[in-house]
Length: 293
Image (cartoon, rainbow, N blue to C red; front, side, top):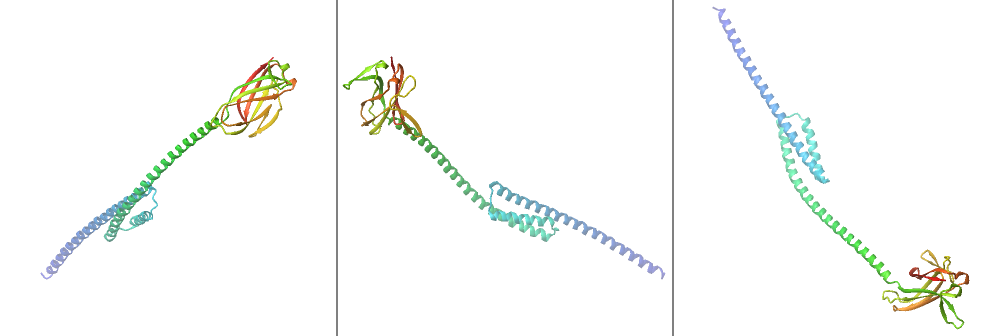
């Protein structure tokens, strides 16, 4: 009987110890599962924080890229987000760290709201300014076009006025003449009897033509293309012209009749067609032809 008592006590101790070990195992398993669940929850929160930071960073990237902004506050905020994102990726999650990141994200969102509102205001001001610049540029281009048109019209008008200001010679006619010893001049159709060539014309009245002395020059070219008369040379604006005779007239913008006599040697007076050109300076006023037998 004395041996049975310790045995019973030993069995009870084993049962109690087994119960305690089982309970400890259950408790340990529970703690492990709870720890694993908590860790998974922290990893999930870390992933969500990462996504939020990426989204906020994308907001900044899109705004800065779309409007080519160089605002230092925006650039600095974007840089801070990238630094925080790098920190989150390498951090071992814990409740304290997750809480700190949540606080930082809330602050970043508030900062984003403030900076984006300011950026929107600046963008609107810039767009309005660009519209004004575009409008001003359009007005300047239209003004330049109008000026070009006006300049072209003025140029055309000046050309018209310049043409209108020239002397106008009417009824240019020429004939071979015989000069009598008495000074009397008689027309002839025969080259062999002629002494000179006389060209007569009328200068028309013209209020636009300049008043004063005008030097009129005459070319008389015979059938052999030889120039009759004095054959003097005149250079006008780089061009060299040769003339048979010259006459200075005082023009008062009224109609006036003019005749010019051209000397000729006997060998130059031949039968055929003669060409007569009348000039005022370098401007040709009239051309005509005559025939001698």
